[in-house]
Length: 100
Image (cartoon, rainbow, N blue to C red; front, side):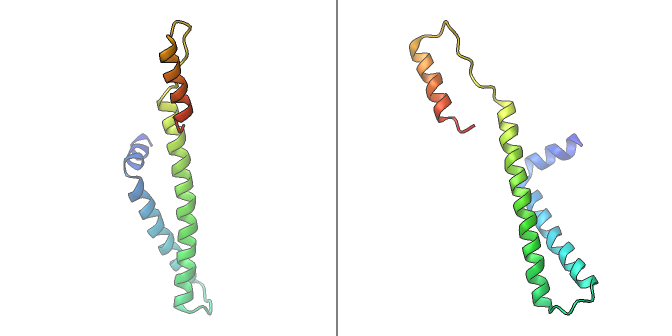
């Protein structure tokens, strides 16, 4: 499991692209197995919409994972009573400007 997680962490765009392609393929297969009266162009449109929904879900998950991964790796600086005023100002500025 750790090997898969590290590979996904290193190849995020490849993973998202593969999930998008598999979403289109799975949706096309699902619609072609049914005896539906839909035209092939309409099946393709539905497959693309399903793949887009899957991609948005994966991107949201990747963003949340990235946010929590970065938050756990970088501990925030701790204010110390022995810190000079200039260092304290730098720490406060870092806290204000740090996106996470």
